[in-house]
Image (cartoon, rainbow, N blue to C red; front, side, top):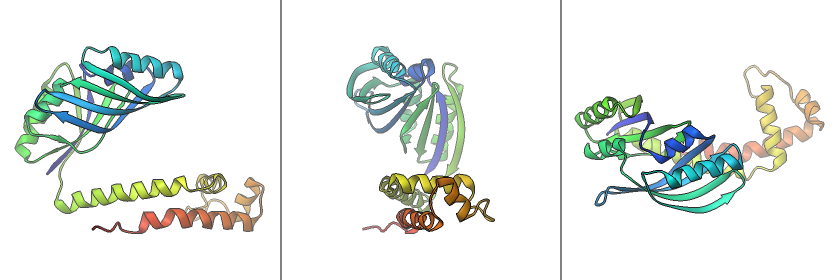
Length: 234
């Protein structure tokens, strides 16, 4: 497998049009490409700097010429979740024509989309990149291009599993644990050598040395296991 990462500004993409015009960002963790009718279906997470920017960005996506259907699934303050169906952009068509496939979610900020792609051969990779970079309507920059061995691919899957477990552990931190460990990191308590002492950290938080020590141990006991234990398979 050949792994490729791109920064891509698509002239015909509704997400790029919206994030270029407004302070809004898109992440698409769930997507499906329908080859029979050249259609891309996305579930998008949307984050904006304000409610006004969110509304303007969603409206831009909804009314874009490439959009074939748009459904707002949820909206709260400056964030939203939506379903988008769109035609094949020039760049996506190039990837499909060279038997490429997406290996991660789209990320679109400031009109620029980050793609993680995979190809089965180096020849297919070179052909796709040549076409992408030769398209004068789009702007394409390759940020990574390397062979990925089966063991590397498995480690990437394991890393995703670790990240998921670590995020879940972070959600179980209390507000006091989160504030304390964040303050400790910012003050350099975990640096070597330390930039602050336990007593100085306690004084900044207005609590005792023993209280800070106990809170840090509780937070560490939640965060360390998922970060150091290897995910098991099967």
